[in-house]
Length: 267
Image (cartoon, rainbow, N blue to C red; front, side, top):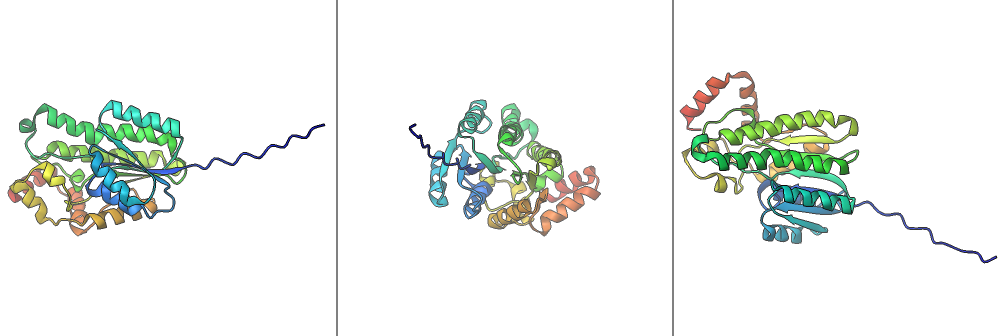
């Protein structure tokens, strides 16, 4: 009888990826750079509108990168992300929801389109991307959702932006608890103004100058602390004394007083 010998199939190695939105600049970019040294990550999926910025970042990471350029609030882009995850069957080690922006101005002055788009990018896209990615996360998985110190208090002429960040904070806190049984942690990052392109988009004004008087935080420090807090399984990351003070004051002071004080301080 002829003996047949079959070589054992080599086990298929699971690829552990970091999915980072808003990776083309600011905190998202810095988080990608700092995560490059993490041995638990095999590959980066970099997401933002500016593909040339993503290509420049990918060249610096020294690990395989997949560039998913486009508007993260576009349902077609989200369907593309869903399809790629289904085909590649990767495991997501960390999801960083850093895409977002703010525009200064009254609700009336900004108008329907700008106000609605802020909600779409800062809130709806974050929720949809998280929902798409969660089935590909297992024990030890991490989510970093980027909010702002603005999440702690209402802000005139920044009303929609501050409200979207309050949404991110409360959504993330609840999700952190929901995922506890799966040992997936959700950390919300609430920085003060940072030395990034944020205010290039938001617009310069006396209000911006007042914000900056609170101190401009180093994006490197904010990112490093966020990753430490995430590794520790903490639900909140706040960098610097001014941001901590704002959080405490927002808990104890009436909102009417806060809004009055913002007006007096030009914030």
